[in-house]
Image (cartoon, rainbow over all chains, first blue to last red; front, side):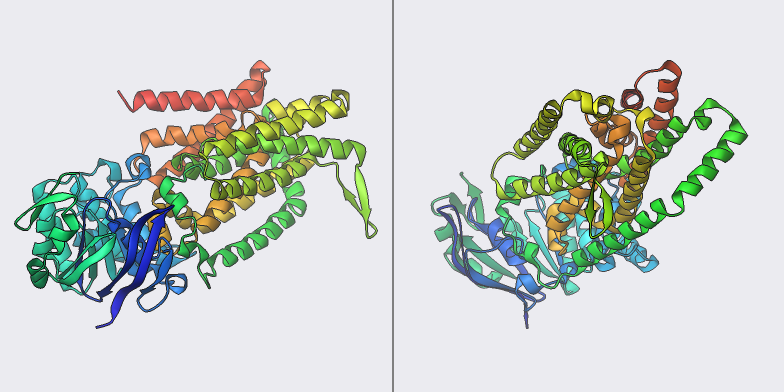
Amino acid sequence: MTDAIAAENITFAYDDRPVLQDVSLSVPEGDFLGLIGPNGSGKTTLMKIMLGLQSPDSGSVELFGKPPRRFREGTKLGYVSQQSSEADSRMPVTVRELVNMGRYAHAGLSRLSEADRAVVDDALERVGIADLAERQVNRLSGGQKQRAYIARALAAEAELLALDEPTVGIDADSEEQFYDLLDELNDEGITILLIEHDIGVVTERADSIACIDCELYEHCETREFLETDALERAFSTHALIRGDRVVHTD
Amino acid sequence: MSTLTDDDRSFRTAVVERLEGNRQPALVVLAMAVMVAASAAFVYGPFPSLYDIFWTTACNAGGSFLVCSSLLQNGFTAGILIGIAAPLVGAYLVNRQMALVGDALAHSSFGGVAIGLFIGATLPAVEILGLTVPLDFPLLWALIIGILSALGLQYLALTTDEYADIPLAVLLTGGFAVGVLIISYGDAIVFGREVEGFLFGDILFVPFQNVQLMVGLALLTLGVIALTHKQLVFITFDREAARLARIHVRFYDTLLMILTAMVVVAAMQILGAILTAAMLVVPVAAAMQVTTSFNRAIVLGIVFGEISVFAGLVLSYQYDVAAGATIVLVAIAIYLWTVVSARV
């Protein structure tokens, strides 16, 4: 299996505060990788570096076999973050307009074609929000909003979905449905890279788990992972561990 | 620009901004060059005779002073196009929390007007290779200074760590100070009423060469936005996702600054440097009160912009008050009406 993302010896610091130290991590195509670690452990930074949104101080990244500078198939990547931006809470944008953005990189400078619009319709249908297409994004519930962002990634025909704590502030039922949808997409071949604070969800859903706290503690299949003491080591200064659930104390 | 968050700053060295082999910016620049040539060819080619035919017909058909006064004809022509171009550009600015960028660029362009007036008064034309190049064209100088300021603003926002409104405040006051300095040095008698016209807007004082420049700028703005709307709206809504989709965010940010400078210069003689920013912001703000869709907000913003320009011009003529101020107040009245009606 080839790697969707391969990061080698990544080191990154904000001024002189080290965030990542010599982290190497690869995500094979089709994998569902859960990235866990205490608050402030550099998970989000690592994800951004892996997607080419940020440059590491040292180390290298390959996206589908190419360094980020030369990787131009932006449509292959989908990204769903936890925070809603200022714009998505104030700007008048309908769900359809949001999902249309997934086609923009395909269309370049030309107008969206009928085929593009059909892909958007399919994506809306796929995540179950076709009936909300004309609603303003800031009128959606948290769960609906995250589905809309997934629909945008589907409209882009993304091959890799990166999600940064996507279910923060979402009720338990919607969260369950959301992860069912991710499972389905993963079964269809989409690579998933998930940052999630709820370790129970990660151990239940992910194929493999990477645990970081500045450095990489462990990266292996979920079943093996649970037999290691990586969680204990990573969280020892941050959290109490009860079974496979972690309760943050910071 | 002023929407830069701390995150953006840390991304300043983001690899995607240095994309190798991304040809889209080059294509846009090429298309813009073609559009500049096409607008210039239109404005200096068929436009004057079309303009005459249109207003002669309108005057013969209606016969009212509104369409027969050549002074108002100039104002209407420029005003109608500004009513389209300003809310169009403003829709992106407002949603990036950059509403005051237009104000800063208008003030620095005013500095450009002063430079232009000074040069025009001291050196009306130069001979270059046997060609007489007229330099007495203050609005063109305003455009040059406006675009340079836009580039400077973008550069400061990307290279300094300070709050984004600091470069804005520096440009706004600095541009104005340059203008005041030059005018005081050149003595107000030389410039007289013309300076005031650029400062507060003076629809009765628009020479035809300025109408031509305004029309050209407005057409160019429309063309560029038609081409790049998708990229601009994507970046406005979600910068990070746009970066991820390998859209050249920095290029399009700079492009939006330049478009803003163009619109501001086009609107300056009608609305005045001090009031120009209102046309970028107020119609869009009104439209956002009453719609849920960005594309509809643009269309409605243009509708509100046109109503403001028409009603403002007619009212100002009727009551013999300043046109720019009247246009702005009509736009604000529409905004207040939408705020109230959205809540009852």
